[in-house]
Image (cartoon, rainbow, N blue to C red; front, side):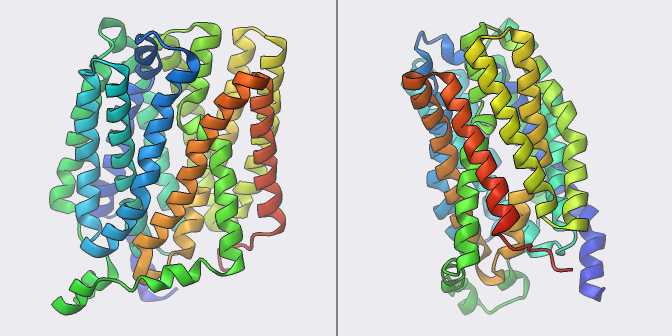
Length: 409
């Protein structure tokens, strides 16, 4: 291993990474977890139908989608540091405003703002990892953050469920406060990692910014175009899990409250945390496909289970079993697509690359709950879950047979 590579390996747990990436990931996830069980119940309090209520998830994803390309450009133009600081601060503002929303349209606007801010944090941290991480550590570095986020989601929903019982707005206030706390160390510890700035380029070169053509030309080759298509299918499959559509389905189908949602989310996190850390090791040891193919195959089978639950109107305990199977399978694939993106990102235009990469994902993520809701309205929930089963199996097939392994042996 070369000296630079050894330094990168040693730096995976450096004080900068711990205080500016891992710790904020943990605290931000804790805040998000606190707000998660309160959101479906808070949305339902506006006395709207399931289809309309789904907009509270969809607009958050739309905000993330529209943020991706501008954020990617700004990350290359003004640097990683400014964007990774601004994201959590904007998230805090949106969460505080949600707590004082007086109407459902107002709630939707604040959720849109929160989606925009979350994308800023995500793309900036991916760019920093691609800048500083060695190829055989990226899987562990990404899944390490995801694992810490899992710990936050494990602790957060229980707190959110019980505080929501006092006042449904309290979890959103706690979320905003934790976002501010999470970013405080970064003001001192975070360093600019953009190659054009860290290498000490001249003021003229820095003003000119990175070379935008690199990422655009990189996207034109067939393997990358195929991988972007797979990324779209991945987002279609996992969008209902990420956005909380399954939680909303549970609230409307089984009439459960925030406490039960908090318990379910906590159990999911407890299952997913060890899987996430294991996925990072497997990706760095055996390759990225080692988790993607079996993980999405299991996810397809889990959605078949969920379709049977919906079709035969099985009891809530059976639904919980299917729900846990879905989230277990999701845990096997944790960080896989982010690691692939980090492998492929061009050094001189990583922000723009991740902006495009995330835009494709966000389009699929927005369409996922939208299509799920539309299919359920006209064909029933059984058809919605079977649609997700088809997309999951498609990912497993394409990655297993068409996508090349990006980890160099």
